[in-house]
Image (cartoon, rainbow over the protein chains, first blue to last red):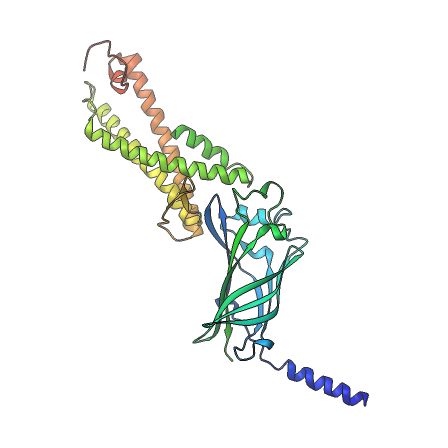
Length: 183
Length: 164
């Protein structure tokens, strides 16, 4: 009996995991951010990240995503900016080399729009976020695109002297684009 | 204003990145925009009120003076322009007083930005060499030649020699 149950369990886990995990073309994907410095929007991005997602508009309940961002791969637009944000007041990349996002739910907003809810963890602090995105078929796969705003204070990003919204605004916009390759 | 902006520029680039540094960079950029606009006004004024003719002096001196003046005029435009283009290429837009965005003419391009940064520095050095020459020449006219050249630059000073 135990063996049967175990086999059933095994079978179930195989079925459950057989939903196609999309392979993401990282060269055609991006994670950008826009911060406001002295009221001037400045764009930067992360060069290295890993994304895995399962997305099926007909099976949103089993759709999911997990994202890993290598914080040291940041490009702020200037080399001294890159060096600065690795330090303790910002991302403290030595102790927290990665930021992650783990989805918990996906729902449809209508009109090709969706919203993924999940935990965003940066600098060891996590927060529930709801991120709107669009999904569309393109020639080489499925393109997920979205943007949301976060408050850098929620994660202790830019502390001490940098805790000054006049020079660097608290609100930071995150924009992403993930291309899932079609098999 | 140019003097202050150059001093600020020299000081701020030496600073470690800090909120203060971001502020100073913005101020420096605003000063640059202002200098550019003042330069436009200066050139327009030159048409309204042309400078008096050069006094008697050797042809080579006249040519040198003319070339120096021309170059200084070019530079008071070129230096703010190069700074603005450099900012664009670095991806840091210039927003005058944090309110009026000045469009980026160049797309983000680090290599081009580094070249423009060098250009911005070199043009500044050239400007200071020319200013030095200009001041030296003016003093030479005043103290060595004892002519009225210095007076023709000063709006309020009366020319004691009575020459025009």
